[in-house]
Amino acid sequence: MAQLAVVGAGYVGLVTAACLSEFGHQVTCIEVDEGKLRRLLAGDLPIHEPGLSDLVSKHTLDARLQFIGEYTGIDDAEFVFIAVPTPSSKDGSADTSYVMQAVETLIPHARPGSVIVIKSTVPIGTADKIAGLASVLAAGIAVVSNPEFLRQGTAVHDFMAPDRVVIGASSPHEAARVAHLYASLEAPIVAVDRRSAELAKYAANALLATRISFMNEISRIASAVHADVDDVARIVGMDRRIGPAFLKAGLGWGGSCFPKDVLALCSVAATNGCRTPILEAVYETNELQREHAAELLLDAVRTIQDPVVAILGLAFKPNTDDVRGSPALSIAQRLLKEGVIVRAHDPFALVNAGRALPEVECRADAYSTLDGADALLLATEWEEYGALDWMLVRETMRGKTILDGRNALNGELLGELGFRYWSFGRATTNGNGLVPKVHANGVAPEVDANGARPGVQEAGV
Ligand code: UGA
Image 1 (spheres, helix red, strand yellow):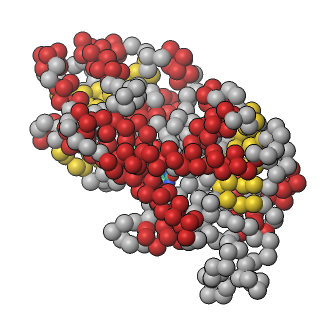
Image 2 (cartoon, rainbow, N blue to C red):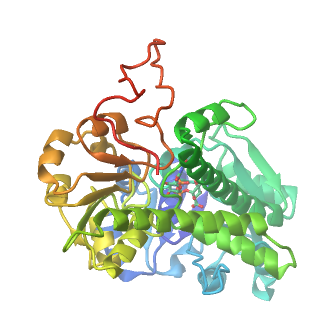
Image 3 (spheres, helix red, strand yellow):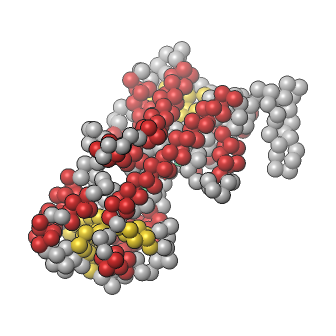
C-alpha cells in the first residue's frame, strides 16, 4: 500500500482521497481553505455526496485518511494527486493558475522521485508543461495525467466501479506505478500519452453534452411535428451502436463541468488553429433551452398582476447540492428581471442557491413553495417531486400551468387533473388527433370521437 497526498478537498479531491484510502492506501488530503479544513476536521463534509460521509468517517477513524492545511505534511508521499479547480476564464479557456500554484508550492516539500498525478481537468499540454518545469526535472519528479470521470451524486460509486482508468504517462514504467494504485479494481486500465489522456477527458464530456443538446433539438422538432421525444429517444437508444444514456430531453445540461469543459475545448482548439462548429452549436442549443423555458413561463403569467412562478429543484441535477451552472438559476434570474416573483424549493441545494441568487424566495417544502403560484417549473427531477399529492397542489396553486423541465412527471395524470401540462417534446397527452398511445398490453386508452382523451391538455411545447 502506498503513501499518497491529495491536494484539494473539493468534489474530486475529497472523493479521490476517501476512495483511495478505502483501497488501503495511506492518504493525506491538503485543503488550504481554513473554513473548509475546520469543517473537515470536525467531521462535517462541505458537500453532499451519497456515501462519502461514511467513507470519510471510517478512514479518519482508522487513521488512513487525514486532513491538513499545509504542504509540509507531504514529504513522505510517493504520489501527489492534484485535484484543484480549473474554472472558466472570461474568454472560455480553463484557468490553470490553481494547478500551477499547487505544483509550485508542493515541489519544495515533495519527495525526490515521487509522482505528481493530475486529476484536475486541464487543457491539453498542461501535464507536459509541468513535467518540463526546471524544479520538477531537478527533483526527478514524474508527471502523470489521470483524469476523472466521476458524476456528482454517484461519485463514490463511479470511483469504485469505473468504466476505465485512464493513465497518461511518458513511459510504461510511470504508467505502471500509477496503475498499481488501482490494482484492486476490475476496470480496464488504459495507458496512453499525457496529451491523449487530457483530450480524452474533454472529448468524453463534450460528447455527452452533444448527445443531450442533440436530443433537445429533436425535442423541438418533435413538438412541431406532434411526435414524442421520449419514444424517439427510447427507439434511437435501443440501437446498440448508440445506447440509451444521455438522451433525455429537457432544460439541458448544467453543472461545474460540461459548460466549462465545452468552452475550454473550443478554446484549446482555437489556440491550435482548429474550428469547432459542432461544439459551438452544442453550447448554443443548451442556452436556447433555458431561454425557451423562460419565455414559456413568461407567456403563461404575462397577464397576471404580481405573477408568481414556483421552481421545484435548484441543483443542476438530483442527488447533489451543487447549483453551479444550474438551468434553474439562470431561468430564475431571467424571470426576476422581468418582474416575476420567484419562489423555489430544493431538498439539498437551498443554502447554495440562496448564496448564488438571494432574490429567490427559498421555501423549506414543496407545498408552501407552490402555495398561490401561477406557474410551476420542475427544474430538477428529485424523486420526491414525482410523489407530490397533485390534487393538493391543484388546490394550492393559483394558476394551473406546469412546465416539466425534465420530462419527468406524469403528464397524462396532470392533464386529467386539469393542469396545463407542458413538457419538452412529449406528446403523450395529446388531444390533437394523433393515433392514441397503445398501452403495453396492446390496448389503446379510451378516447372521445375526436381521438382525444377527456380532460387531457396539450403536452409538448
Ligand atoms: C459530468 C460527467 O458525466 C462525468 O463523467 C465527469 O467526470 C464530470 O462531468 C466532470 O467532468 O467532473 P456531472 O457534471 O456530475 O458529470 O453530471 P452529469 O450526470 O453528467 O449531468 C450533467 C448535466 O446533464 C445535468 O445538468 C443533467 O441534468 C443533464 N442531463 C444528463 C440531461 O439533461 N439529459 C441527460 O440525458 C443526462
